Image (cartoon, rainbow, N blue to C red; front, side, top):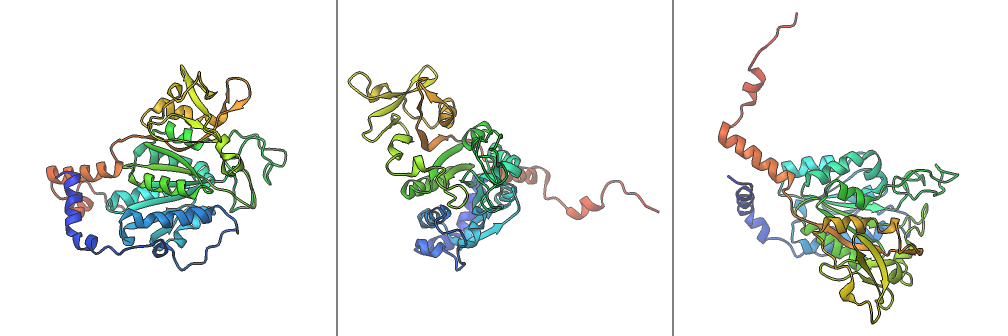
Length: 359
């Protein structure tokens, strides 16, 4: 019996539950817990957009689970009126993998931060992406340790002055998107807390992906790293500093959409659009092109044309491809073993084989 048949049988068994799905609103996904983030924290916006997105999914609340690690973002499960677990530092991907593998019918979300995912949890983070478990990971990136009061994180830029780096950090930071692509992630995207409409779109798009979706969200820590992403979030500077990726569309940006990015071989260049250079000359976004996705993930690390002009920061889906899901493969393998070898007998396993008598 194939894994698709198993899932179809499950759906038929629970058909009554599905047809009786309530007409949810965002308020139905808000718990009765007081939200304990600092006033002005970007986490509030992310929470609101996740709650706005949930009714659109058409999934019963009892079939949705939020799992978090440690950090300000990891309080998230308390504020969602769904099942959830506030787990341990860096281990949310491992727990989510076990849950999704044992209960493939559930919709599983992982909430993590740049400290939780990229420091002690970095191995679990990359293993999740490599395996392509069918879960959704939201990485709140504020480039600082917020919960422990302002130490630099694995995503903090070099030179940042913090409580743990009073003379400036000498660490080279992780690039979450490049790391995700390097781990063979099948869905890699970026959004920001101060563009709620686009953020909701990216949350919904993450859910639609069959496999591990990794959505990095720029999130402002108003107390310990305020303004870290102001160039991209401020409405005045955003058009010049940000570029929104759309499948099959040229890379255009600027206040008047008068700038673009083109490829000179494999070298991207920022150009001004005019009578000589038009949109037809620009790089056209292709979510399935891994080479271009890697280039996009590195935009903020390189100047353009050698003249000091910086690339705009990309937002949207950099990369999205299909690959077999770990959880479905496990279910299929277990089913194959049962069909070819019969049901296992735990008592026989425990009592069988060689035994020793200890005196």
